[in-house]
Amino acid sequence: MSDSSRRTFVQATAGIAALSQFPRPALAAFGGKASVDIPKERMSALTRWPRYGPEEKQALHALIEENTYYNALPKFEQEWQAYTKSPFVKAHMNGSSALTSMYFALNLPPGSEIMVPSYTFFSTCLAMRFFGCVPTFIDIHPKTACFDLDDAKKKLTPRTKAVVAMHSWGLPCEMDKIASWCKEKGLILLEDSCHAHGASMQGKMMGTWGVMGAYSFQASKLMPSVEGGVGMYQTREYYERAAAFGHYEDPVKFPKNSPVRAYEGTGFGMKLRMHPFAAAVARVQLSRLDEKNAQAISNLRKLNDRLSALAGLSEPLVRSDQKRVYYHANMLFLDEKKAGFQRGQLVKALQAEGVRATIWDYPEQHKLKIYSEAKWWHHPPVIPAAMPGNAQVNATHIFLPLLHGPADDVIDQYVQAFEKVWARKSEVSKL
Ligand SMILES: Cc1ncc(COP(=O)(O)O)c(C=O)c1O
Image 1 (cartoon, rainbow, N blue to C red):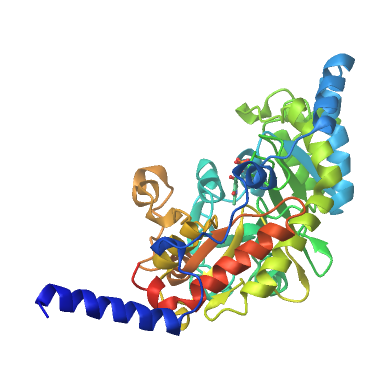
Image 2 (spheres, rainbow, N blue to C red; image 1 turned 180 degrees about the horizontal axis):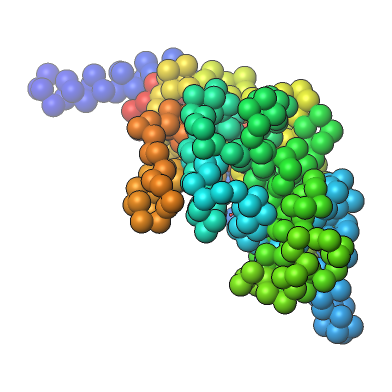
């Protein structure tokens, strides 16, 4: 037998041996039939976001017809206040302006340090800059992607005055533990709840654990008004100060003894009013928020309850007293050792099967140039040498789409795709 025919023979018999060992269908990545054959249009309809319909159109038409634009704002504020059981709320132009006015309301001496996650959107960390405050970057827990209190305890300085918890992807931070530590240390607790519309812990909505909390209604968010935001306040003092910043017509409505009443007509130089069209859309979205969350969660549970049987695949940890929601996607963690292949190989295999699996690393704030340049800050922020929690979450997650409608067929096919990939791990590890 010549060398080349021997090679062909060996390859063929190895192939037969492999086939008899694995009577399952071949991976799509190696030419097999893809597990998922849901038409593109149906997947687009199930994953489309924002989800607007006749009610949003009707609300916008009514506003135009009635010519009562700004009335939409107090109506929205009252409804949000009732939904979240907040003592005070103020609609803002977006989540970033709600955060900016929150930092203004704090009224801290320049040089005060505020603990923030580095795994977040820029305005959580940067908006404090305008008022002379400096971020202290706190890691996230690798199994929740939320605020790591143990890391915070190590980073406390005499200048630390406040703590911002951000509820990543709709999972509440451990607010009871964070709140009691803040109380013990005399720190002000704040919340960036921009991912967590509808989430609560021990029956308390996110954004009401801290003395102030901010939400965003930007287009990708769980309650989208395309742009929009809201601030929530536990005290009249914080509310009035935050509302006076960017809302020039508010101070006159405050009691005579309000410290900001004299600043009527100034907004302290800012104008951050929410657009009334956005408020009209937000009202409709709020009326359907719980229903939409429930639909997405029901689909996600059906899927994850089956996927979590696979070696090395897990969900972020949720405590039994936390009611989480899901912003953006269904985030799962892969333990490569237990699974027997790498994350990149898994994503390739799943995508070939027709699963919309993706990876998206949150840009870590502490690595951005602006924090390492002293000229932007009262004093230079400390840039941590390592953030193992951030690194682990960014290195181990995969995202699956949220499904916003009846989707049992998609779920079944996704499960088949995952099971097929797990059954052929030695092949996946060659991708
Ligand atoms: C965690 C977090 N904080 C703050 C914001 C800011 O919200 P907005 O985009 O409405 O300014 C966002 C939204 O992108 C966010 O994801």
